[in-house]
Length: 165
Length: 231
Image (cartoon, rainbow over all chains, first blue to last red; front, side):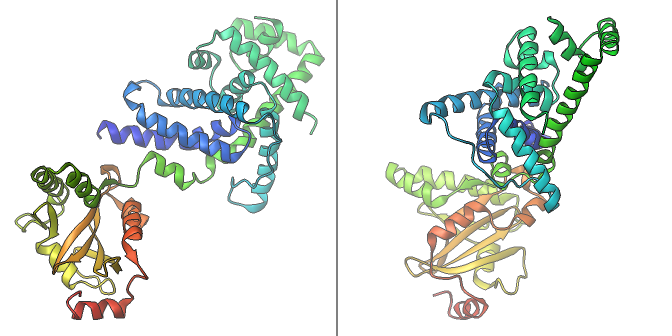
């Protein structure tokens, strides 16, 4: 298999997880898919910087995270603050399961969106994506203690927001 | 690490075995802490569960297409425009010959004639491709070249889209010959069943859209056009 097709195959295989991470970072599905698309485009353009043999997932997540920071900064400049839109989510096969899942996803996304960005990304990487503390500290270029303390604050705030529902 | 951080690190399986055992004992002896652990375990699985459907959901086409662009584009019309502007026709002809050779070289049976001819910087169908464009009907596919749509362009000339193996293109009637307007090759990774199911190459579809006037021919009109020598 040649390198280029293997890179694209691997990236294609990561798409579902990248979308999930994008949903964990974004306020709604449309933003999440825009972020995913931008990430893919950036990854394809920067493929020369990826070293074969290293983890493509961490590398792509880092790209997504950096793009997301850029996007939230420019969004913050554009709009002062608007309420997250109601939306229809296309997330499952069975209608009713999909509805239930969509409701809970919506609720969780709302709560995540209310976390400060630096807590949200740590919560997304560890609680949603299942990365370890050390992996996240390397991915984000942060001391492990910082990762750990942001995670404590983020998940405690989440519990206060959605714990009783 | 604060006690809080240690507690959550334990919950996340991040502590070494000695520290983990210590925290385990502490939680077991403290109902309040045990309750908190339970709440956070539930929260964790609820968060994971909420996002799970996204992983199993169908990935939108636009994202799949972003990873694997549907085709590499060799748009001869654009190339001709650029090169005409640069006025280096010899180079154009050479480049076009090479591109077509590379593209179609693998697609025609060995020993068969080249499927294209280059004349004055223009590329015309030849041999099997020319014959297919002359004689094949979309309504009655027979040979290796499959005809897609037949229609008229803005100049009123007849154009036909075709597919052969992993490449597809568009040829239009110019002075009694089939001139290639575009030829598109699927990237290596897609030269398989995937393409068969994918329908018309999006780049070809865009070229057809920009070329076509009116509706594509139906079977009867296509047959009639053939009997009139594609005029």
